[in-house]
Amino acid sequence: MAALPFSSPPVVIPPKTHHTCTVIWLHGLGDTGAGWQFLTEELGPQLPTVKWILPTAPLRPVAYNVNGVIPGWFDVASGNDHASAKIDQDGMLASVQLVNDLIQTERNQGMENIILGGFSQGCAITLLTARTTKIKLTGIIGAGGWLPKGDKILSLTSETNKQTPILLCHGDEDEVVKYQYSQATGRFLQKMGYQVDFKTYQGLGHTSSEEQMQDIGVFIQRQLAILTSKL
Image 1 (cartoon, rainbow, N blue to C red):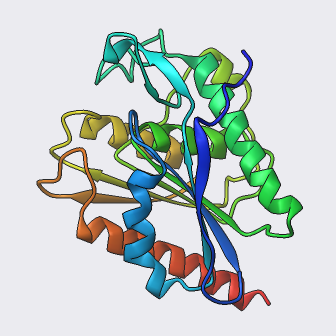
Image 2: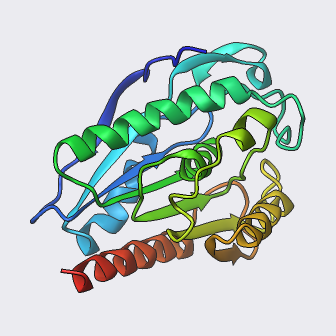
């Protein structure tokens, strides 16, 4: 399946000082890159060397939206269709290729320190990319999402990011992507040998929170400190 193009140019927030790392953040279904600009506003002051890239997913008909066309990284039939054998693997892998291309563009410009993160559908594509790419990432962040599985997906597994730190964040009252899906994802990744830090947010639904933003900021700062220690 040929990848659909991004539906609009990514929001790009340049670093305020010397560029040491790029964070690419993927939004959820029906949202846009601009919809997550608050993340950069919240964390930017404490991460002045970070460049932020917030792409907007391709426009596509989505069954969950009665086939209405909205930004989406892949098609989904219902809010909790994540365990279905009929998941849109082709759409997922096409979006993974888009993200890989975005990562490679950064690398071609001389930046190899890249943290990939996302929310909901964006989390799914983040984790799929981390599991399949042959490009070494600096860190991986998944919020309010899960790791999809399927025969095509499993056949493309790469070992490149086995040692890359992963932060998973999920609210225990999420009714869109059930908490147990994220728990299962964390257990699966740990069983496969990945380095996972799982954070639970009491009373949080399918959204972000101040505590979650703080944890994401601390995670990014930790990866930057590791990079600095290697210089």
